[in-house]
Length: 264
Image 1 (tube, helix red, strand yellow):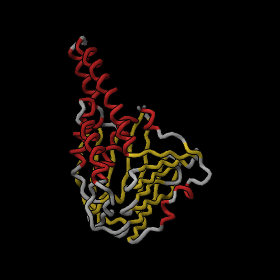
Image 2 (spheres, rainbow, N blue to C red):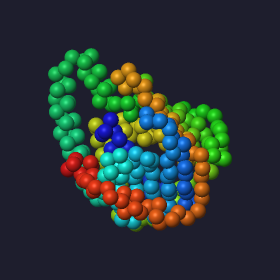
Image 3 (tube, one colour):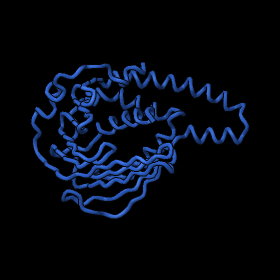
Image 4 (tube, one colour):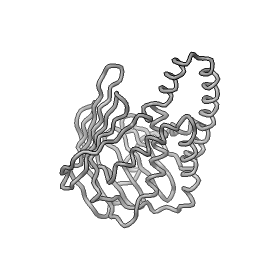
């Protein structure tokens, strides 16, 4: 699950850098429900920075610097990582995956056909069985959005409502700085161990627009885990610099190494 999240994060960063231009800054307040109960979260989207998250944790992405700051409000900690460092971590992970893939092939070659087939299905992961089904339309925070049902195997279902009436502003970034990272993300996705992730990305392209409502239901070891968020307020216009000020947001917090740097 952690590997899947890291791969999706890398792919998400690459996709984010190709957002269409000509859009105003956006501030979106979401009503959230999770294992810890209900609450709210606010996401900020400008051409220079992005901040998303809630009371427990937040992420700030500075486009020009290519820096991502992860803030853990529960632990009172924060960490930073650059695209260059992420690329190095991805390359290291790719090398480890290549070695693991070679070892797995050797082990699977000696297995009975039935067992080998089962193992191949398992290594494909949930991502290879993702399907996106288009539903009806509804109103959320004053905007018409399209419902999509995303099935990730029998254990996980996500419902998304996306609107084409809203577009976050395009990141103001030098394309040369991210070209290498995007290439590394594509190479990683083409690794045999991540082929299923490519299939998942292709299926997710069916979802058009900006997500303003999302709910997920997941079953893990017989237990159900449900979470959801839905926009309750959407504002267009300039965002104050203080909304992205890490020194203020994480005042008094301890700086720790970013988890991805441990993958080197």
